[in-house]
Image 1 (cartoon, one colour):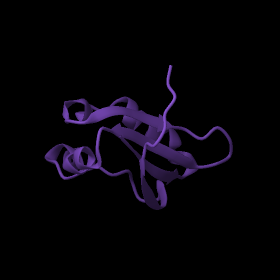
Image 2: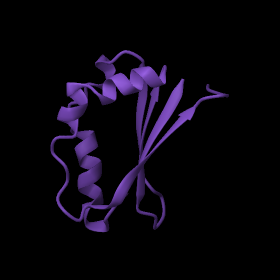
Image 3: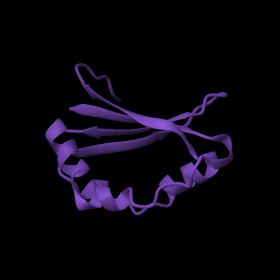
Image 4: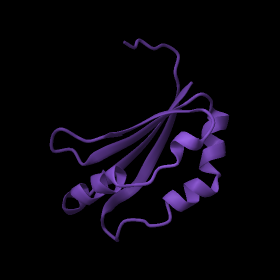
Length: 101
């Protein structure tokens, strides 16, 4: 299993819009093999970094989705200029241990 984190720094005036886009999207993630879960992590303090986190059965499953038409469509309407600070940072981790309830 892998965890994919896309760390995105969002400018203050656009934070509400950023979250609304995720809440109102018509996601097709659940239709893709290997998809487990998706979380949008919102900063709790003065930090401006949001984390879009997905869990996949394998890296191959994630890469298949990342190369799909669904991925292209879901990223086809970017936020306006100045909303995203810097380039998002993508991190991929292997899950070596887990404790769940």
